[in-house]
Image 1 (tube, each protein chain N blue to C red):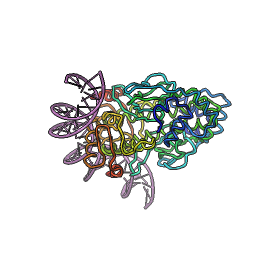
Image 2: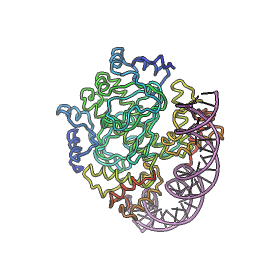
Image 3: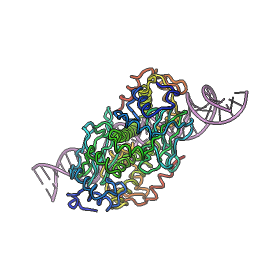
Image 4: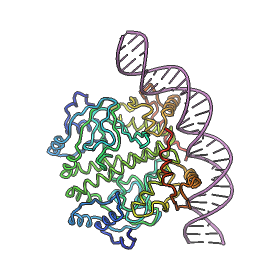
Length: 247
Length: 247
DNA sequence: CGTTAACTTGACGGCCCTCAAGAGAGGTGG
DNA sequence: CCACCTCTCTTGAGGGCCGTCAAGTTAACG
């Protein structure tokens, strides 16, 4: 993994390298571009905007200009209903793209908040779109990324609509574990960037329920919880919870 | 509204007209194309595939080649989890596009089942994509449509994660009402194409709960239920349920 | 007219929410 | 470096919403 200093002056090329370095499936940039196409991408992407923990990258309603790729850090996206209920719609880590929900209305549809000090690349959408016309790989890549977001959302709907609290938590932990592993971090020991309340909002549960179930998992020897530090003791045990469903 | 016979031999141009005729926001085709561009679209879109009620348009796992636009009829999309749980991820009516979740993996991620005898246009994705390179309006329209799907899904996540059963049903009925109205049908009286179980699957409820709450709404004088025929008596009453939330 | 799928309604129980109190962690200023 | 404050988390007790199970009714279709 590159250190924060190393990637301070990152280019599109380096960003791609960074991604492939840690073997991300979830690439923010496509592979297979020619050096010239790479250079063109480089000239479009705006580098290194820093967002402090707790700050918003954008808010619902703000005019949409750019997609954002997380370079370093951790974000949550959330929608707020008219009557003030918050639903966390996703957590985003390095290499992931945010803001695709804003294209349809030219305004952001959700808030994006940094859960730790973070750094993002800005991808001005108009220019990306224009470039994509001449670079089919890029064009197709954008469709793919948006399609993947849709698939992800459908799976969350499955989780929210069909699963019990324990199953949701197990699925959540396994998903985080996998994504950290893809980035070269430990799959068995990681730090939660979000509060119990934010986990609960994402999973359709109350924070007390999240806390209780994490404790229960610990009692059962599936994980070790120390504050926001999670250690997965039995990966298979968590998986078993997912497949042990009533019907 | 055009009759089934009138739109049997529909072209892209006619399809667009049909859409604008019934003042659809949810266009399957963009506006602003030149006659020549229109002709090119026409030559790509495959006409009139008929799907009988209960039949699948595509199934999860099948290779992806085309997006599909509903011309006539009504569909449900659903994902099935590994252990056999079904989650209905959406209902689709005339003018709406299906299959965007398949782009990322070149294979369909969900089943699409006709809930009444239906007719779809096929939009071969490779060719649409190629055409889109030369027709910026089309290109942008595709991004917009996928973005809208993401926004929709986020709102369903809000519904599943935050709302009580009554609120979910009220939101569901109001949403259907609005979509029928956009198509020139009555906003206050319409026929449900899906079973209570399918409504429940979409809303994260059991079919008995759906049935009970529809009965309750009827007792309260909000709607009239006669089998699958719904009459909305008090639009405002349903809206009030949505905004009367605990916090 | 018979058969099956879909729907309704009731009784009951369990899962998760609500409310509450206290403990713990992290940051700030003295 | 410690005291203090605030945010976060944990744990318990109780209650309500909705799921489960069951039986009966209605609608749909051949």
